[in-house]
Length: 205
Image (tube, rainbow, N blue to C red):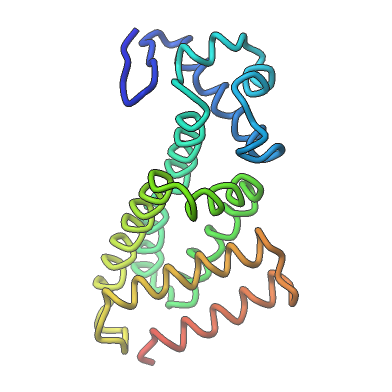
């Protein structure tokens, strides 16, 4: 076995399957019990493996939580911006692209609602978790900036770097609020107004 970044990573294909099973089970346990209420014993039980098997792959509960975050960030990758560029190339406007980006963010938060509540709480108190969140946001901002630069002649905003951060903040915070904390006006109405606001902010036409 090979130890890497605090984890035990067996190279066998079956071992990789077991590792993924543990992470998927851990996401459910963290979502249902919260970070404080979760432990390796109930994670192992949810995964259908012995507690000792969990320690073969992960040093402790925090490492498991971080690896679940990394797993989800892999699912919420920057590939969506490739799709957005394709929409522009097909002649779609900013509203279509913003609907794609906002819709993907809302759906991702909806699918992982309770786990992200725990992430947000830990980002406020744990430096390592917060650093992972900042790295995630940096990747998204960079992808968004590249997208805006590809259509800078159609954008009325001059400072595209600030615009990319603002758009990311608006989409992510509204996704958090509408899905994780429940919007008082409803997810659809809030999302519609977000599209109007961002389209008006960006579009030069």
